[in-house]
Every structure is written in C-alpha cells, then in structure tokens.
Amino acid sequence: MVSLPSSPAISPDRPLTAAPVWSDAHREANFTAWLNRLASAHGLITPTLRSASADASFRRYFRIDSAGASYIIMDAPPEKEDCHPFVKVAALMQQAGLLVPQVLAWEQTQGFMLLSDLGAQTMMQVINRDSAVANQGLYLKAVDALIAWQTASTPGVLPPYDEVLLRRELALFPDWYLARYRGVSVEGELGRTLDNSFKQIIEHNLAWPSVYVHRDFMPRNLIAPTLGTGVSSLPPAGAVSPWGGPAAKPDDAESRLGVLDFQDAVYGPITYDIASLMRDAFLSWDEDFCLDITIRYWEQARKAGLPVGADFGEFYRGVEWMGLQRHLKVAGIFARLTLRDGKPQYLADTPRFISYIRATCARYRELKALLRLVDKVEGIEVPDFLAFGRI
Image (cartoon, rainbow, N blue to C red; front, side, top):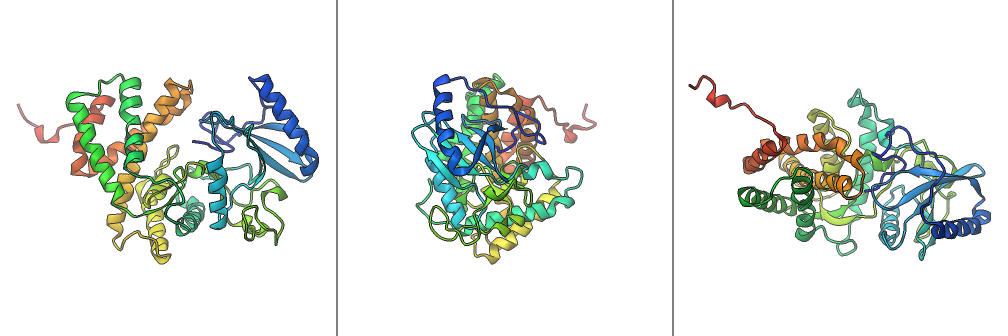
C-alpha cells in the first residue's frame, strides 16, 4: 500500500518535509544525475527537494518546487517495484475522467519518475473527525470518482481479482496474524473453521459482477479538492494527455478529488471499493453514516447502469462480506509489516480491523464459527445471556 503524502508511519496531519536520505551512494549518484538533466526542462529548483511521504512498500516520494508550482518524484527501485502497472492504470484513470498524477518523465532502468503534484493534503487530513455529516460532501466526491472509474471498466485489461488472488490474500490472516503475530497453531479444528469460512467468503464475493477495482480506495489515497500546490497539477486547457485524448481541464481540480495509490488495480467484485471507502483501515464511522453514503453510491451506480442489483439490502450484504475479506487480509499485511519489515506502527489500528471482523461475523449465521475463533484468539469473553440464573 502507498499513501501520498501521508502515511501511518507519521502523523496523518503532518507530511514529511526532511531532505531525502540515501542508503545506497551509487543510487543517490544516479538520481542526482537524472534530476539535474530534468531541472532545466521543467524549471526544477533542486535545493527544494524534500521527502513527501513515508511508505509501506519500497517506493519513496519526494516533492520539489519550480517557479510557481511543485512536482512529485517517485523513487522505486526496479528490482523491488514495477512501475509499469502505475503508468498503465494512470492512463486508464485519466481516460475515465479521474484526476491522477501525470507521468512527466520516467527513467525506467533506474525507477525514477517525475509526476504532476495534485496537492499536499489528502482527504484524510481535511476530514472533520468530530462530525460524520460534515464530511458528506467529500465522500460524495469520492463516490463520483468511483462511479467514473467503474463505468470505464473493460474486461481483460486489468488482472482478474479471482479465486486464486482472493485465497492468497485471505491466507495472510492465518499465516501472519494468527501464526506469527499471535502465536496460534493453525491446524485441527481451527484450521477447518478457517477453511470453511474462507470458502464461503470467496463464494459470496465472487458472486458479484466485476468492474475496475482500485483496491485501496480510501481517504488516505484521495487528494482533497481546491488544495493543489500549483499549475503543475494539471496541464493547460486544451492540452493533450500523454496517453492520447484531451487532458483534464485546470478548472476540474476545483471539484474533483485526486486519486493516488492505484498501481495494484484489478478487475473484480463491484462491492470492493465502496467497502474500502466506508470501512476505512484508519478511520471508522457509525453505521448510519456508512449506510447513507453506501445507499447514495448504490443509487448513483444504478443510474449509471452498473451491476449493483435492484435490492439495496442484498448489495449491502455483499459490501459487508467483501469488507470482511479485506480486513482479514489487512490484519495479515500489517502483522507482516511489523514482523518482517520492522514497521510496528501499522498494528496500532489492529483493534479497528478486529472490530470490523467481529461486527460482520456476528451478523451472519454462517460466520459464527469464525467469530468464536477470533474472540478466542483476541481473549474476548462474550457473556452467555442464555445461562443467566443457571446453577
């Protein structure tokens, strides 16, 4: 996962501003030479280079100024990160009318990329945490972007979010969260419970039609409107995008949310991205607000001809089951980041995931065995009200 310009490694309201530090002198020299070659063409002021984000992957992001504008630089070592999906999905999103970073220069052999800067504040940073309703406008802008992305869907363009991928993601929960983080032996009755639960989760999720899936569509990966850093965020009116067709107009930045962290996009269940948006890995809302935005999304999706079905209750159940899959996966990912990558800050949000998981499992009879398993692992004792007064 990537968050720009904020990350759980730092305060969500305070992006990094320190000068970049290099552990590889050879790579630093290559980067400096590449940056100097670009400086004159783009008017870059090289002494202004500073860190723009921390990251859960091997990518790093810097911000650099020019006269009256700023740009983003991606540092993605090619032996560890493949930038081709980023470029491909950026093109698809731009063609769908979304506001995304434009690739202005790309040194493929080194993994350096110059991008337009959509702004310094994410949706997460401007959200009013004290009043869900106060954020309705922001969430509806996110819904607009999601509808535009999904209506552009074409089969065979992005990798399929199929059973193989769903099963591989779910395996992160027993492999990393249960076995390595919690020290639980995943075998016997516990293993059978997981196998049966995962089978049902996969079946429920794959029952929904497929569209383009961002796969991490949440406030940390959306740039707040009207907060761009300069004219570099969009091309001049009438310009042609690098991928063909008209580029977005500068005025559009006043109303649209910018979209980031899209390189892992796939073609999969339509329930995924709205579940990701409303069951955020780093922020929770009361169910009334989640229902309100999800209903508005569903109504708008139906009008756009997207395959969300005619029964909202059925669709909402699909969103809950998809959210369950996502949170089991994320719990495993965050445990892996802690144990393998030395980034323990991600597990601070573990109680949120467990709460999501337990709430969904408690609502569906088929998931009660999984609920009991999670309660046992977490040491949660649920009162047996039927036993009240029993001797």
